[in-house]
Amino acid sequence: MNTEEMKRKMVEMYESKQFSNREISRQLKIGHAVINSWLSIYKYHGLEGLLTPAYTSYPESFKLQVVHHIIETAEAYSEVAGKFRIFSRATVWKWMKNYMSEDDWALYYLKREQRNQMKKSKPENLTEQEKLQQEIELLKAENAYLKKLHALIQENNRSKPNKK
Image 1: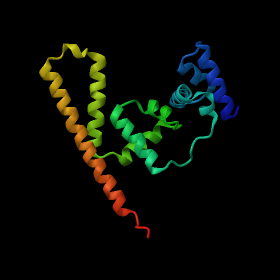
Image 2 (image 1 turned 180 degrees about the horizontal axis):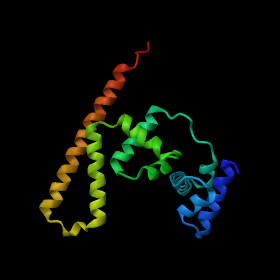
Image 3 (image 1 turned 30 degrees about the horizontal axis):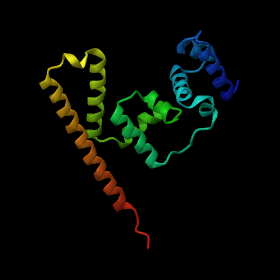
Image 4 (image 1 turned 90 degrees about the vertical axis):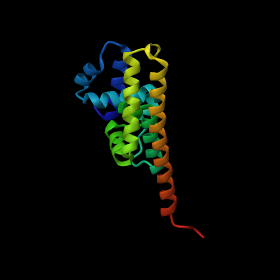
């Protein structure tokens, strides 16, 4: 069975709602992470998006867009990979590792922690002071991120040769 046939079979099994992701993985003898990536792409882009060949190399601006999205949303790697039609969450992780500064990581972890806290406790339980403190922390991290992004853009513009 070639890759396209496997993807079609996976979609068929998924749509039947009779199989979990792990069962699909076992039956097709494909890693669970791969199945999750394919399903994420399928959810956002349909069968056509899943079957159309992916890029082999991505432009720098696209990579930065993906990393920026991750920092802003703190979504799971596989979710982001699906949204942006990247066939491997490991690719997303590699870009994060290559392009994120310490401030970016701090903002990402802060947002991820806030997302997890929102799931655990309702925001109505927080006092006004706690809400304001959270907002201040988030704004500080966002400010540090934007400063770093601005510096990277300036550095990138300086490194480009001038055309005459």
